[in-house]
Length: 280
Image (cartoon, rainbow, N blue to C red; front, top):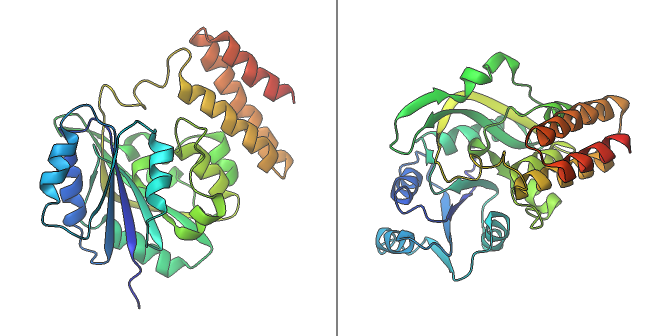
């Protein structure tokens, strides 16, 4: 069976302490057909210097050094235009791929066929020093993870560890890349992709997800946060994507949760936005 090219797009922003480990984890993959594209999104630390030193003897690596900060969605889309792969991994420069990550994903896609568009797995959660904190499956046990057509499940609750995702070119072409109007990409990608493609899950730990104090995920539950407003935009998209009463019920459940969370943060304007969408 042929080995499709897998394009790994590594996005770096002020990850000087971690980018070497992230890139080395790509070069340690057991899978041979990998294209690596690195994008530095105008880091103000020494990230660029570290990257240039690491790739000096690697002419096949594409390095895009941005002079102005573009955000993760726009940066990924820029790299996407240069991608040769049939499969993609969006790698943050503070996360780490385990050696079998790519091989496992490719094998699953080849076994399951073209109706599947996204594969994800368990992950080890580590701190800034690489120390083990927990496993993603500690909160989301393997037995509770749905597979196949999981559109409604994704409306209702989060259970995918974002850094573990591998997705197909068809998903990217169908969705025309990431939505650059959003502050984050994963929830929107899940919803648009799962409407038309099946998802599959591997219980193996294939990625180390690093928790950093300054990361977007650590700071999303704050008042006037752009990620929270992006969540509202994605919920508005879901309203138009829904086809059944059960899917509408799941969206109302999601909106109730987001409304109450916004009230808890005393973000009244955002809470009103979720409430207004609930009534619509």
